[in-house]
Length: 84
Image 1: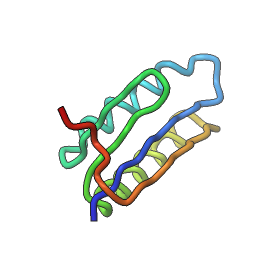
Image 2 (image 1 turned 135 degrees about the vertical axis):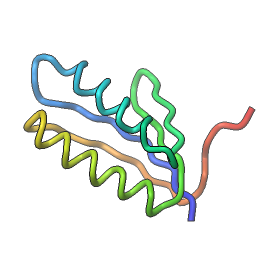
Image 3 (image 1 turned 180 degrees about the vertical axis):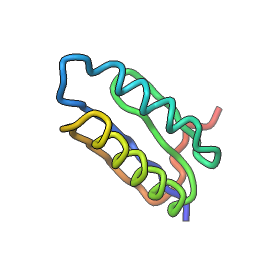
Image 4 (image 1 turned 90 degrees about the vertical axis):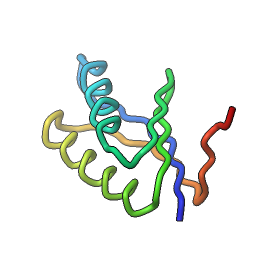
């Protein structure tokens, strides 16, 4: 099953941009995922189990590295990637 996720990450610290950019970079290194960042959120597309495993790993790593943070996500069970 394909999955589309719109993800927003809010590290609760003064220097919030660095952690956000680091998370987007880490998501981009997940070879099986399509990652589309924009100014308000980051969209992820891929096979359900791969997307969820990547989110679990990266959320845990972010909490450990940056402390308190908020993740907001919307999920849809299809590939909603924009097509040209």
